[in-house]
Length: 441
Image (tube, rainbow, N blue to C red):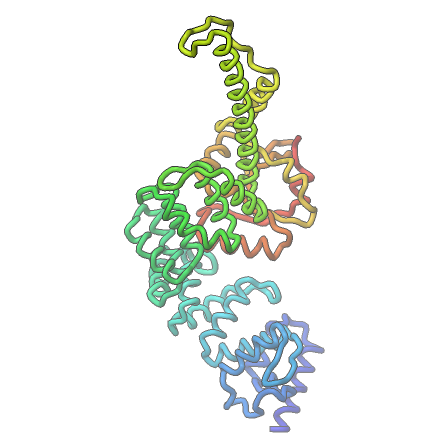
């Protein structure tokens, strides 16, 4: 074994030092020709390569991925060694390692993207009935990503994952059937996911009760489903809670104080539409205060009349009272609130973003009417609109969210993709500094 170690170590040196090839090719040459070269200097594993358990390899790979403890020893972070062990564990047939390797080459942040590797190992993992791999197979077939788009295979893999109690797959299937207007199957899979406390499913079911899609409107049930998600700072749930208390009805009393609370929470989570409702609440409260003052003044006038006539039932003919100037000003202020048909722009809000903030761009168009229609159809999704000028042309851009870092924006983008919120749209992450430089005022 010592001779084999020396030979393999020499091979590592020669490949790294003299052959100018892709790093991933070096890894595969090592694994193919001399697998034991991987473990030549690693005292944490057995020297007998054939006896190494792929599960143990995978667990050690996870430790090397982030650094940590391994059987009482401190392990420093080593991404390359982590990738090596994951690869070997996957080749030895461990389904979790196969899935992990497939995802690494699919997202390709630290290695060169390789969809061929993704297809091979994701399929192997899914065929071993690993629910997460089955779910991802379904998503990729549905979106035409990595695999060629195939609706039949997408449903087949998503159903397999759902039958194996994968809540994300159950939710994805439910959204598919909602788009097909098959509410029976949609509700079936949503309820399955909700039983597992899958919050995106709770939010969607809450929205269905709120909006009355395929089911009778019931704000009480909507709040029951949305409350937990809203408390976990899920923006859409917070926003819908605010709208329910803002309008009231369907089993819930109107409560502007509770509406304000949830809209404020939604704003903290990045909702622009919630800001508009907060402004509306402020206007309504000012209007109520003004009306209360008017009523109080009218009561004083009536009291003076009664004192003059001595008879409350006797009509007194007088000139109509003139509205106080401060109330006229309030009416003018209310009239300036944008109408439903106008296009509310958030340029001022975008201007306040930090340059290293990010948003997710949904669509871009020249015609305001098309943007207005798009927004009205997706009122619950907390979208924002800005007007920009690019190449001497004016565009209206619809964006989602407000993120303080690229990683947060990417995570949100993946969630939007998995939840199918914007089907057949090419979503992409855009920096706030880029949008700010193009804003039109």
